Picture 1 (cartoon, helix red, strand yellow):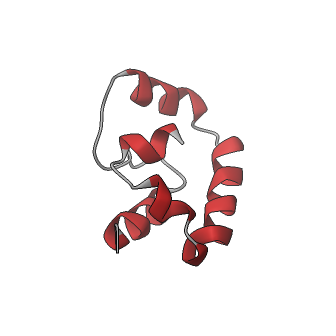
Picture 2: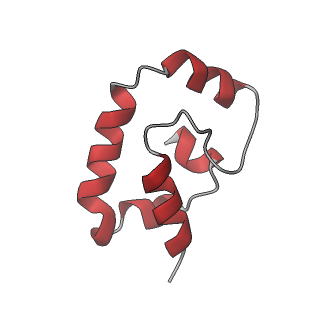
Length: 70
């Protein structure tokens, strides 16, 4: 959730029916991410905008942010 908000992605768009299964998969990827410390550091830094390159969900976040609110 925090990465979605920081990456300027609409949480509603991320959870819509079209992305429902992908959203659940993204949550699982996040929970098992080997970059948890780097992610926490990025989030704690107050950064915003595009997710960092190490994020396992960067493709999902880009796809959802491209859709935005319809």
